[in-house]
Image 1 (tube, rainbow, N blue to C red):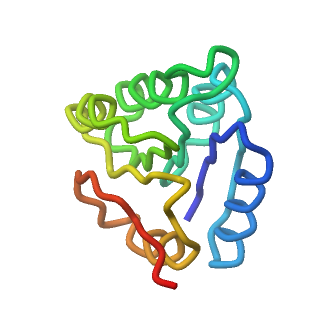
Image 2 (cartoon, one colour):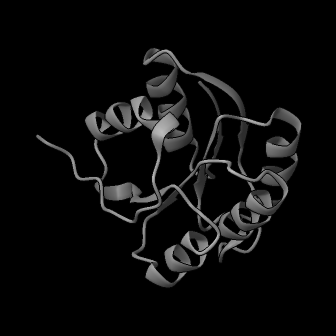
Image 3 (cartoon, helix red, strand yellow):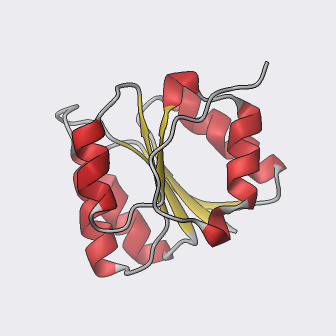
Length: 134
């Protein structure tokens, strides 16, 4: 599966790349700031996008805005939204245009990521916390 990852935290971003590639997925692009997200999605047309909500330059909702615009330009694009914060309003807005899911990044373990990555082709709109099973 072809994946685009948008995350400004280098450690988390590179960890996601390692986790997903070790599970057999191809990470076709990474973005570290809001303005990089939409061009990467439009150029690579991934099978799924994993996006952080708050990204540079403003650390407000750049990732979410990119996700919303990407969903308009690439209908049916599965999007997994990451956030350190419980942003129910953001999640509800994104679900209104068919988001695939959201995860609170500080509460998500590697088992949840690899399990979720195997199901990306059959996403259904849902908001749920992915919690690690330690």
